[in-house]
Image (cartoon, helix red, strand yellow):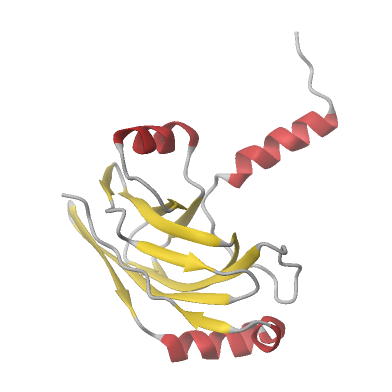
Length: 175
């Protein structure tokens, strides 16, 4: 029987956690990788939900099957209430892929593109999830000044060192 050593267990745990939903922000002034930027957004919801994103590309059956089997590049977890997130993300173009609320989900169109540049704080908007019975909706609002104020107050080091870019993300359901 295979008995993993400490290093193998740590690598497996790290790989498992890499696909988990993001619930907290990076610590101000922490190291951001050379090929990474910071994704800044506000999430609001009246129920729990999960929003996945993957590198931008084709939204095909194969891509969706792979996401269901392996997981998305990143996931944002909505909680009941409001919160800000500032997350290190590899530079590149991304698209929202799937919104899950309870046991329901919706695939999102691949035209919902946003871009993260290395060494830049990219603000993609205030994402609001609204659930009413079996119906749910997701909208994006521009609250740039609120985000700038939040960054100044809670992330002063990043605010001083990194340029700020607004790239509001679109969200459109498939179907």
